[in-house]
Every structure is written in C-alpha cells, then in structure tokens.
Length: 305
Image 1 (cartoon, rainbow, N blue to C red):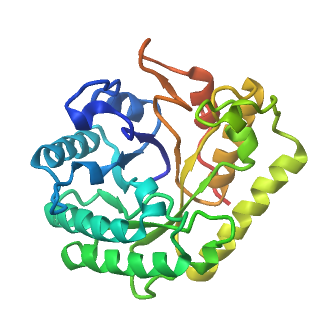
Image 2 (cartoon, helix red, strand yellow):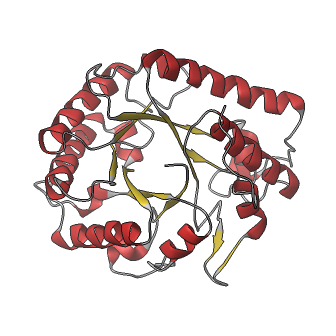
C-alpha cells in the first residue's frame, strides 16, 4: 500500500442503495487517479441480529465491494468502524467485535490474499489501554485461527493521555501494521464543522508556518522511533481538513502531511472520498482537483528517506 482513500462509511449501499452517492465504478476512478488502496469503513454492529449474527444481505454486499475493489486494481482494507459503541460501551463492543471478526475472518479464510483486516477504528474514549491490549489479543487470536497469513492493521489508542508506545503486540506475529490518525491541530483541521457548536464558531485559522511543519515532523518522528524500535510498519489511516478551512492552508496541510508520511515510508489514506472533507464531487462526478493535486502531485514520484 502507498496512497489510499477512505470510502463508504456513511453510504447507503449497505442499506440497499438509498442515499448512496458512491458507485462501484468510482473504484476505477480512484485507481486511475493514482491511489492503490481503499479503506472501507464498516459499521457492522447495526447489521447484527440479537445473536450478533451479521445479515446475509450485508455480507453479500461486502463481498461485492471487496471483489469490485480488487477488480479495479485496489487493495481493500476493511475497517471495523463502530467507534462510538466501542468508546462508550466497552462490554458490548467486546462481544460484538469478537462476533464480527469471527464471521468475517471465517468468510474470507483462504480468499482474497490482498484483503487487509483493520480490527477497530480509533479505540479510545472510555476504553483504557489495558482493555484495548486485552481485546486486540483476543481479536488477533480469532483472526489467526482462520487467517494465519492475513495482514492485520492495529490502531494505537486514540486518547491524548495514551501513547503509541503503550501498544502491546505479540512479538511472533510479524504480519501486523500499526496505524494512527492525524488531525493536529484539531482546531485547524475541523474549523467550521457544523456538527459542533464550538468548531462551527471558530474564527478562520491559517496553517503552514515553519513551526506548524516542525510540529508535524516531531509528531511523525515519534511514531517512526516506535516503528523502528519494534520493527513494525506504520499506516497513516486518516488525515484531512474540513472544507471551511482557508483553501490555501488546507492544501498546504494536505501536501505536507502526505509527503511527511511518504518520506518515512508510510502508506496513507485520506479522509474521505465524499460527504464532508470530500475529495470527489458526486453531484458533478468530478474530482476536487486542487485537493487531489495536493495529495498526489502530478509527476511527483514517491520519495522515501
């Protein structure tokens, strides 16, 4: 993996196509634009019955999305994205997430060798690092029982007081990628976001000073030191800037963060294809060209230190 984009988290494809701006032929456009993978955001819990069984219809739609991504030449990363439940109702999360990965891992055992499993998006909230380390050991054991060679993505705890160094991974399992998300400074990347009264009321904030860039470098170097010490690959699974940020600053940020990841040899996935933070205009069926150029500059090859 190198350059990717998050897709389908809030799309009606899972509910049967109502309010579903994403089309499967968009996968070809994503590949042609220069991306090589898609991070598919799955809210699987709402498609479970009272016994935590995923519906057949949901699983068949997931089959179609995975097959379509691979057919388009993309690596699919399926990401368990039920963050809200897992940050608040820890016991419910543990039960449902275990059921989700047991069913999904069994379904794809021996199939789609390029398919990647991401165990949980942004663990954190009320979930402690001890709880997360315990849960991820259980989930890894579930996946490995049927998918011993599958590449698995594991997130660092997404809370300010936690550090990536607190993540405990089995030393003998070398088919694990560590992931983190980057939206710092949050009041810049989320300025104007209408779902928060505070964010919506923020004054316009610019980004791009030497100090701003130095902060990104320092944050990424810290992750890189962990990766080098533990001999683990790193994946920047989300980053982005909400549309209401000053345009020039938004584009500078996207270019700087993407290049900083690439210089360290990290694949990345932009948040997100459509809806908010959008990379693609689904009404006009065109890319937001300036955002795409910031992420994938024309004729600029990948540079890695």
